[in-house]
Image (cartoon, rainbow, N blue to C red; front, side):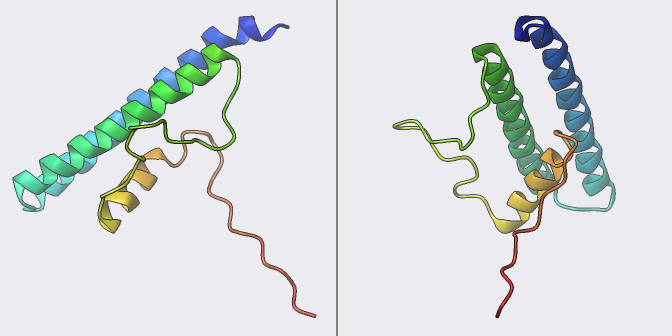
Length: 115
């Protein structure tokens, strides 16, 4: 089976995962509002989440259409590094929103044995 035959299937999976993450972001937004958090901060966090989720989707679709997955993302000249300028709370929320999109959890760093 050639890679060309897999691209549409992979794109469907990416699109489905994107829809699920948007749904989760919305549910979090609604939950935060329902417990009385400030509307403005809820809106800002929700919109930042959507932007990051959309960026992840677009990068994944670009990667499969180009036929490779970049090992380490590099910022393009003049492009803001993802997550730069975000609070720790926002970074944690985005990490949570994006976790599970690959089906693989975050791997703990390896520890060296002391001799």
